[in-house]
Length: 233
Length: 221
Image (cartoon, rainbow over all chains, first blue to last red; front, side, top):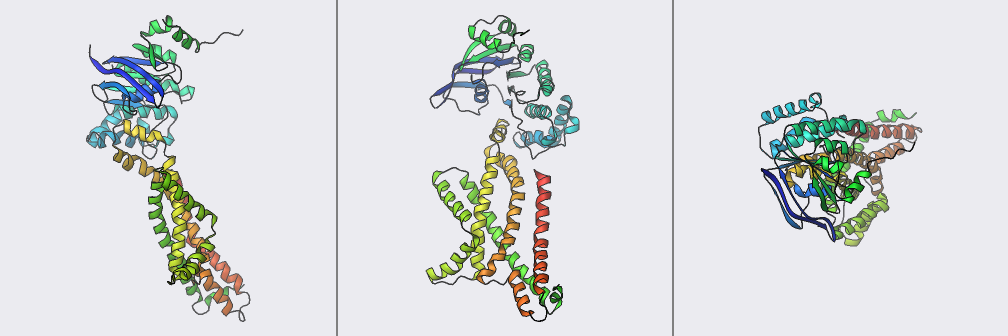
């Protein structure tokens, strides 16, 4: 298979606290991996280790290409317009031609339904719109792997859908993605593979059908039950 | 009402010259304060214990001491202590810069701290180098936040220059007093006219600056 990301024996510690404990994981090109688990299990840290925002204490992360990341909080640059936000890195980091980048930015914005907003500032956008721009800003760098860190967690419920639809659309284009999310219905719909992380270790690594319908571990069952509600009537 | 005194001799021109002295001193002090304040503010945000302690002491001194006391210490005290003569203008520039640098440094430190960590991280995730992150992402945001705040500091400095007549500088307020004294007999109501005019002059000097601050605040934040 065509491996694009390989993690071997990754260990991440903050002082004495082990956040990730000997994680090994391989992701193939075009695969959509959804990472779930209780808060504090190390999901976000795993993504941050993959794209180098955190130093690691042991192990190895090898990526065939670049990563792009979208964060939970809207992290657009507030002093730049949408278009300037999109163009900064391609022009300054990748040294691409402005005209070409601008054209691509226009096409991508159209795809996420934000053509009309290209000259607006982030403060003039809703949370959902900002997140869609943030996704485009990661995409325009042509990353081999896209990392999504709870991108809908800070959004109002009615805006979650528009962002998830964009990510679903990316999955259809065979993008390789690692997605950390608490949206279980979305996870099930988009995932090729589900990773269940707890206490810094991978507890399950399986298909969405297997994970959601018949999780093997007691811990996964317990975790999934937290999303269910008993009928009180 | 006492406004007629203004038309006598060169009185109006003298008042304007007095305002000029006040503006000159505040302008020089502002420039010094901004330069030194930027440097100190950046040093303070490095979070080095020694720098932190020294700057805390410095800031507290500036906060606690009335500017007038500082003026007296520098103008009268320094001369006695060292036997060297410091002109009133230089003394006031020293005091105003000492005060302004502290305030400016605190503003710079606050602005630097108010930039969320995620701004640095998302820049890094996009592959920007540290230098590029500062040039394109962090510094433009700091300047935008700093402009309205430092302009407020400038207007406060201009107003506070009214204190420097206490060490013998003939600025606008002092000129006003002199005019009132000189015309005590002929225009007994001169005090109202003159001080009202001075109020207007301060207003005319500070108002455009404060408008600019408001405009920039709307435009840039």
